[in-house]
Structures are given as C-alpha cells and as structure tokens.
Image 1 (cartoon, one colour):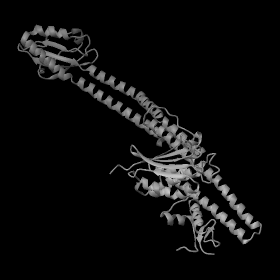
Image 2: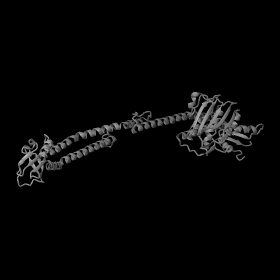
Image 3: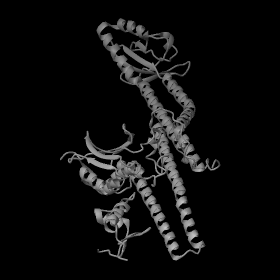
Image 4: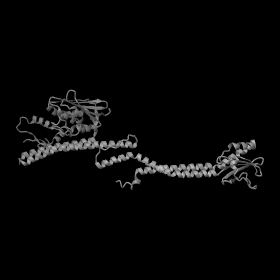
Length: 62
Length: 466
C-alpha cells in the first residue's frame, strides 16, 4: 500500500518482490500481475489493478 | 616517399647494419694484419739470438769433438739459399780462413778485417762485394786461439718485411670492398622480413583493408616469429572488426524497425486528429517500443563488455542450488501459466565463485528460452552436477528443439533461427549467456535432446572444496 495510486514499473515490481534488480526478458511480471488480478479483481465491478501501458501498473480504487 | 629516401639513408637500419658489419670486418682484418706483421717482424729480428745459439752450439761441439766436428755439422745444415743457412768460418789469428761453410754463398763477402779490431764478443758486419748484402756475425775464441765465426744474412729480413707490407697494403682495398659487400648482403637478407612487414603495414594504412598477410618464410627465427605474430594479430583484428561491423549492421537493421514503428505510431496519432485517448495509446506504444530498444542496447553493451573482458564482475561465493531455486521461483508462475512442469535437481554442495547478478541472468536467459520454446504441457528440468573440477548446469526442455545446422550460430549476436522468429525476443539472450560464462572462464554447449527439445549445458569452474 506504500505505492497506492502510483504507477510502478515492472523493474520496480521485480526488485521489490524478489529483492534484486533484474532485467526481465519475458512477461514474468505480466503473468504475475494477471494472476494477481484474477485473485483480486475477478467478479468485482470496480477494478483495483490498472495497467499503464509502457509504464507499469498501478493499484488504486477508481 | 621515394625521393626522401636518400636523405635519410644514413638513418636506415640497413645502412647501419652494413656500416657496422663492414667496420667490424675491416677492423678485425687490420688488427690481424698488424699482429701478423709484428709477429713476422719479431721472428726475423730474432736473428741475433739464433746466431748466438748456433755459435755456442759450435763452440761446445769444437771443445768436445774437435774442429772436424764443426766442419761436418756446418755442411749438414748448409742450404742452397742465404736466407736459411748459417755462415760458419774458422780463422787462425792472422785472419787466414781455415774453413768456410758453403763457400759459394759466402765467398762474395769481403772477409778481410783490420788486425787491430777485437772481434771476439762483438757484433760486426761483412759486406757483400756483389750485391751489398750485410752479413751479421758473432765470433768466439776457441782454445787453440782460433776464431770461430757464425753469421747470417740480414738482407732477406728486410726483403721479407717489405714484401709483407706491400701485400698487406694491396689486400686492404679488396678487403674493404668485400666487407662492405658482405655487410650490405647480410643487411639486405636479414631485413627482408621487416621490409615485407612494413610493406603490408603500409598497404593496410593506405587501403584500410585488413586481409593482407605477410609472407611466412617458415624459417623459425625471431623475425619469422614476429611475422607470424603480426599475421595472427591481423587475423584477430580482422575478426574483431568484422564482428563489430556485423553487430553494427545488425543493430542498424534492428533499430530501423522500431524507429519506423515509432514514426508510424506518432504520425497516425497526429494525422487523424484523434482524441486524447488515442494519443495516450500511441505514446504508450512508443514507450513500450523504446523500452525494448533500450534493453537491446544495454544487452548488446553487456555482451560486448563481457566478450572484450571489460565487464566488471563482483565475485562472491555462490551456492549453485540456491541460485537455481531463485531462478526457478522467478519463472514458476510463467511456467504454470503455460502448463509447463518446471523442476529442479541440484546437490547442495556445489559452490562457485561468480558474479551473482550476472550468473542469475545467465540461468534466467536459459530458462526464459526454454519457457518460450516449450509448448503447453511440456517440461523443463534444471539440473546441476559435478564433473571433474567443473560444475555442470543443464537446462533441458521438451520444446521445439534447434535444427543441427543452426546450433553453431545460436550464440551469435542478434541471430534468430527460423523457428524463433515468431517469438518475441532480441536474439541476444544466448550471446549474453555465452559471453558472461566465458568471462567466468566457463563453457557453454547446446545439443538436441534425445527425446525432443534441447539441452543447454553450462560448465563453470567449481571452488576447490575448502
């Protein structure tokens, strides 16, 4: 929740989740986020996870 | 260039070699001449010593065996020329010749001497009436008051020395010429590889073409070694330049596509007077594309740093099994998403000294490839084992495999096999793997797996067991 409503990049997510800098080659983060989305947003009208193409992802209630 | 040559001629190595060679040659010839002249000179100067020795021999002969013995001995040593025979004469007190060895030789000398001169123990000279030759004579008084004279001609001595001097002077000029010619010939021969070398170097400077090679004489000497090394260096430079040029070509080619796409996207967004949303969309496209280009450039830099050995590695002790687990965890979700079974199998006692982040990238690239080219329902195995002093890291997949003829090329930068073109990627992943592993003094290998798919092997030196 520290970065609520802020857009975070894929690299930031990797660094935060796995604890080190890493150059993602494929869609590791995309897959992770889509699984997260399945768990968080499925079945709700209001989405919490938003994709900002080219930049990253954001978690906000809108 | 050619016209300048004579001006700087005295500075050329060829000239200096010639000069020193002939200088040493001539100098040693002169020294040899002087030494032999002095030697001949002193050996001829030994006249007096020889006469004295001969005289004392005759004296003791006369004391022991009488005067007849002198006659026999002197006849025995007599030779037809003045140069090597001794003058032996026996006179009574009033200078009457009692005996003269080899009269034919010594008769022409004026042997009369004034009575008052004391001959004994003195050196004196008789002059030849015929040719002015001098006879150097020593005398000794025998017991019966007879005088024994032994002598030698000294004319030949001067003749020999003069002749010797003339010969030396006459040979000096040919010797100087021979010395110079020999020096020039040697310098010419010795410098031939160097001439070839500078010819090739000049042609490279002039034409900027690196395919020229210096002819190899195969003589195995130092200059030949230089030539061989020079050729090897050219070979290496040519390879490096070709590599650089190729990857530059590739980069230019690979940049053209995204840049075209940038333009297309931007133009589209501007032209249609599209709404705010469409513009956002276009910008996002551009960002994504630029991200890709950045990754490509960074990876390319990494590859070339690792290849040229300028990559900074922060080495630390790494447990291979732990590293494998990290990477496997990273790809767990992706694999699960594609219904690929990702399993690991590594003993816990393999330790390496390596740069953790780089090695993780290596393994991740291999796993990433495996995930990309393995269809749903396949499996990927990451295994590690010990083989001699190396750790062997295997990434096996049950994917589409690599055609045999492409295997040698998959490690090349920006190479994309026919089957891999459909996949998203840069064509740099394996180049980075190979470059980083080699920077860690390891080896990489790819081969088709017997039951379909491929096996990528990485050999890395193990830390010696502590």
